[in-house]
Image 1 (cartoon, rainbow, N blue to C red):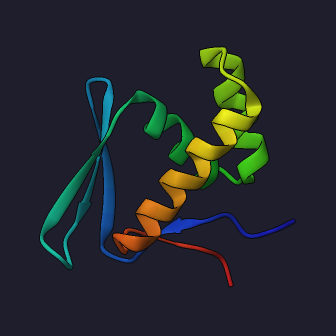
Image 2: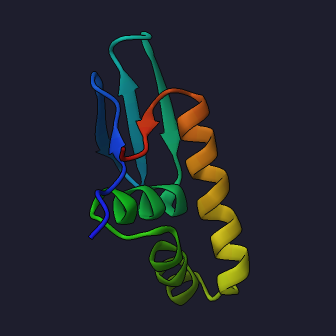
Length: 89
């Protein structure tokens, strides 16, 4: 089994209503994820791969798996670029 993605050291998450806040103590900033972003991130942090996260998103929001996979990829890329998340070695 592949190691799941993880938040970088110093990044914490907190649900606030229907959004998920990612707070980065190292950089002194935060990012707000909407309900779908939170679903994707939580699935990935729980060990799902991109395909599995996309399938969950597709089932809940009735979008195509292809569109959902694009959304998973975009969010993952954005979080890595923002230095909030890291991929397993």
